Amino acid sequence: MNKGDYQQIDPRTPGTPTPTSSGHPPQPRPHSQPQPQNHGENFGSEPLRKPRRRWEVLPGNNRFFCDGRLITASQSGMLPLTLGLILVTSGLFFIFDCPFLVKHLTCYIPAVGGVLFVFVLVTLLQTTFSDPGILPRATTDEAIDIEKQIDNTGSSSYRPPPRTKEVLINQQVVKLKYCFTCKMFRPPRTSHCGLCDNCVERFDHHCPWVGNCVGKRNYRFFYAFIVSLSFLTAFIFGCVAIHLAMLSHLHFNLHLVFLTRLCTAVELVICFFSVWCILGLSGFHTYLIATNLTTNEDIKGTWSGKSGAQDHTNPYSHRNLFINCCSVLCGPMPPSLINRRGLLPPNEHLQADADIELPATADSSRINVVGWLSFGKLFFFLNIFFCGGASLTHWNDI
Image 1: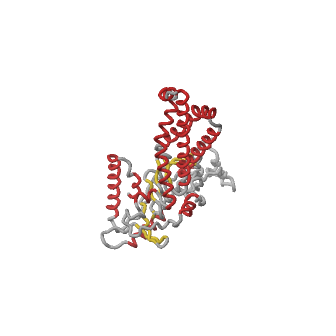
Image 2: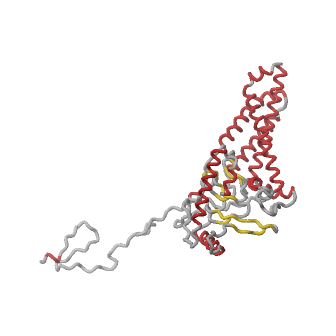
Image 3: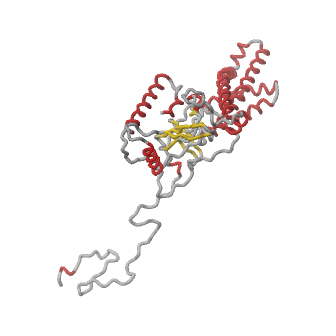
């Protein structure tokens, strides 16, 4: 028996042919080898992952709650202070003022205050946790196509191709700016918020007091919030003043009343300094709605001649106060365009934080343009640090 005719085999190994006495392995029988079982996994490839929601991979600085049903900015800003002032002032009013006013005046005072308080909270939460009108960013193919269109319109000189488009709205030319972050031309009245890092349709402003952008989809909630808050603040201020006046009339000593009713005095001071600011803000936004303007357009003077435009007519105004109010506040709620609760297919990946890689073009001067933009952003932040945040609304121009 030759040694080379045999192979040392572990007898415990399953499925191994046993050599015969002649030294040759037996012929395999048909269907003798077991077939691999498929338990939902493809051998040689990665296992299928569980489909994810789109909000899990959406770019931008936003936070999501309740499986993507609620959306807000990543920075809450002054929202805790807003909630705290409303809850503390209303709580002190219901605890210390309402019992006295119900006893000496009428029982309808806490009912009216309760309705206003609930309405203020509901509209505040709707403004804070709703989509303001975020536009989805361009896909890779869309961004490359836009870059090709820009290259075709550019000249062969050293100047970079123009990053604007002109469209005609109500017989008036409106320029559309290119967004370097979202890789698209912004639709009319759209602006990019630097805090949320998203393009928002009909962008009004980023409000730190509600912790969210104010745009096309939540502007009506914001306006209802500030108007109802104006009524609530004025109502509490009037009731507190009546309470203190009645106490001073009964005790004939206003100083003693303020010492014994310290909480009521605190309410009076808070409401006195708050009511003028809130009433002024409500009046300003009432003017904007009546003229169909946004805060962003009014500050930049887009249709008032401050921006250097030749035609100062607002193309979005209906030339009628009632129609303007109805179009802004009473129109149908536009759907959300980001589909944040939609399911992603297992093999599809949304572009999250990584920038779209665009093909290199012959015009190398674009690098200088982006560099100047970065320098402009740095100068803008230094200006805010030393001069205050009053010019924060101009961030979208950079």
